[in-house]
Length: 132
Image 1 (cartoon, rainbow, N blue to C red):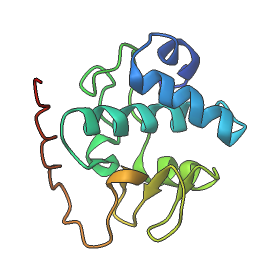
Image 2: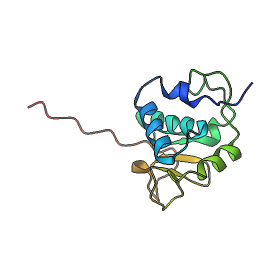
Image 3: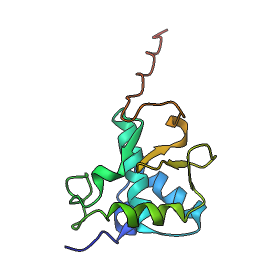
Image 4: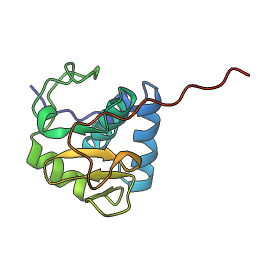
């Protein structure tokens, strides 16, 4: 199987994760499909209530299992992390960047990263809106 390489086709399918992937690609000045995939997975994880996506668990998985419509596999973890660290939109813990990648391969949207956050913790639910 091929490693995923068509970020453009997936990013054009719509949804918040696709819009965020396009935005970060523009900010990075690169249409790197590995950045696109990682951004989509991080956004999808946040939408499901998780604070991060564990790229170590996603690495090598069929893209269909990860919720993507493309055939192929997610890249190996080492290759993926190295590619992500080349982009200015991906920082290390303690750095200010839209995405934060820690040493264990967990990728966070900056707003959900906290230095003391235990891995895999779920976000607290949003408060209910008043009806009146």
